[in-house]
Length: 287
Image (cartoon, rainbow, N blue to C red; front, side, top):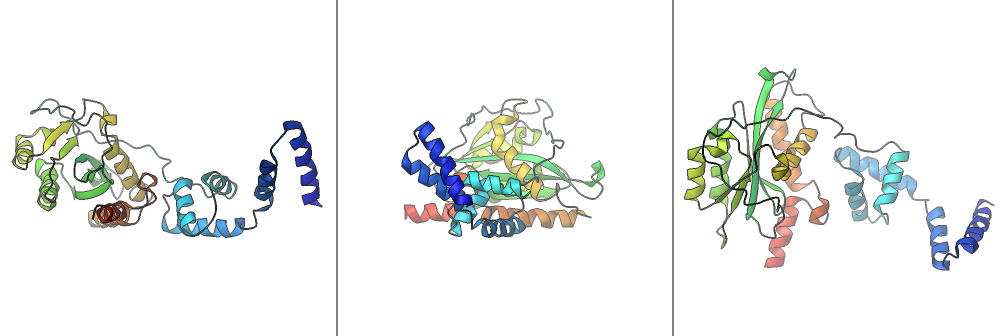
């Protein structure tokens, strides 16, 4: 009876709007093809249990991998109706600023917000942020830095220490430069104008390995938006939604999250693959 009334209503609309018959039957299928909604809700909950920072677009990709014939609009509607939307990012926090004025040499902005590249190790970005544990006071504060490849957004190296010294940022830099494969093009390393990156030892290390240095303009965080975006994701996966009693627990949580981020967290711009999956897939295509 309900189906017959719906057909009559659509028939009236079809005559008024002169709708194509294909659109009419498509509307019928959409209206009465919702028998799998319960299965979709169960699948969404299972995905959210594993990936609690996934929004509706990433969940749509995961559902398609499970052979669900859905689009992101329907998934967004289902998640709204069943209170399954992701709220992990609903928080504003203080940002760490390592700028201490002109204390060394400032490099030009070579990247200039051109964050895309089709070659690994061609463009790498870095920055420093702070993470807190315990009662979140300044006495319970650690500093995190990472080097991120813009080719696939993979975290190549990182460090977490109690003091943001020059050695703190150079340790993962040396690790990155030593494991970098031999390439026929030079790397560009982009950062802000923090005092660590203006230091002569840091810049001498880049010159030794023939790496171009690039810096954001002063007080322009959007020039290093990729690093800022990753730091926000890291905090959502760790300190924003979890509590850590000591520094070692925080460090282990950061290590686990970066492992998860590199190997398991899919990205829409990487065709639904994780950073490491995308790199392996690209290597296979090149071979």
